[in-house]
Every structure is written in structure tokens, then in C-alpha cells.
Length: 279
Image (cartoon, rainbow, N blue to C red):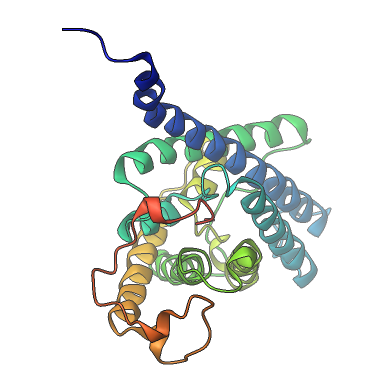
């Protein structure tokens, strides 16, 4: 039997090459997002009270931290969404798997890259800035473990819903999705940093914990966001089944409301541009 034409070889290697590009993109994007965010948070915490770095954060410090995370995410999502989708967050990746926008195999390769990038970013901040690393997620303000879990789940649900409706759903403002996602993270940090440190992203919590040590309730920064991703999928799927696009006609430039879709609500990965950006 003759060997296949050489022209077929690149096509056979394409899936592996694409996967490597996506994984590299997620690593680089997650690293840059968290590096800038961690530096911003470390700066705010250290300068919050020079005499007591563990003192409660002032409103100005909270705004500083929220701005660092929100703008760093928006910037890097906008840079890397063409490469990997700009997820940078295992909870967002799970949310995209649930709607079929990311294949499970790709997700299994992406998540370790996100976690590794977080460890690298935390390590660089620890090595470059003076003093101990202070950006690890911990409960504060008297919040209990149960309360922290619920807060993390609800705020992550808000984030993943933002991704669904601004990035996965195609509309006139899809190109602005990175800004919406960044604002969602900004608001989450203003809301929850005093209580949980605001994770809404298992990767964000994992890296600093590797460097500074794991707290006994570290699991809430994994289970909370993952439960939030599932909750957001259930809400999104309900609205899709109810054909929400027909309730407020004229909002989509593709006139979807004129042709209600009754097939599966799952989104095929190949039908999506890589702008399915995530936090």
C-alpha cells in the first residue's frame, strides 16, 4: 500500500499544533493577567496601613485592587482571545465546556496551563517585590466558610453569565465583551474582597497558595466557583430554551428573533470565533 500524499500530513498534525497554540496562549494570558493583578493587589495591601499590613482594607485600597484585577483581565482577554479564547479561569473553562464552546479534551489541557501560570505569576511577584506574598485568598470580616462558599459561587455565576451573554452569544457589542468581563471582575472585587479576598477563579487562588501556604478552607475557592459556573449554565440554558431573543426584538444584528431556534442549546466549538473570552 502506498503512503498517503505528503499534502495530507499538515492536516493530520493540525489538531496537535492548534492545541499547543491554545495551551501556550492560555498560559501566557493567565500569567500576564495574574502578574499585573497580583502586583496591584500587593501594592494596595502593603500601602493600606504601613504599620499593620493585616489591617482591614480601606475603600481606596479596595478600589485599587478591583481596578488592578478588572483592567488586567480586560486587557489580556482582548489580547489573547484570538489565540485561546482568553479564559484564564478553570470555572469559565467549565462553563464553556457545558455549552459546547470548548471540547472536554481541550479543557483538560488548558486548566493545567492556567494553574501553572498562576504559580509562575505568584512566584515572580514573591521574588521581585520585597516582603512576604500577601495576595493569597483568605476569609475576612468575620465571614464563615459557608458564607465564603456562597459568595464565591454567586459572584462566579455572575462572571460566567457575563461571558455567556457578551462573548458566546453574538450581537452588536460582541467585540466589547472583554470590557464587560473586566467590569464584572471589577465589581466582584469591590463586593467580596473584604469577605473572601475574591477568588471567582480557582487558578487565581492556587498560585499564591502554593507560594504562601494553603488555608484549611482552600476548597471553597475551587468548589464555589465551579458550582457558580454550573449555576450560570442552568440559567443560560433556561433562557435559551425559552428563546429569550424573541422577547426583546431588534437587539441582534443577525435577526435571530425572526427565526426562533428549537434545536439543542449547545454551541458548537467550530461555530465560535475564539472571542469566547474568559476570566
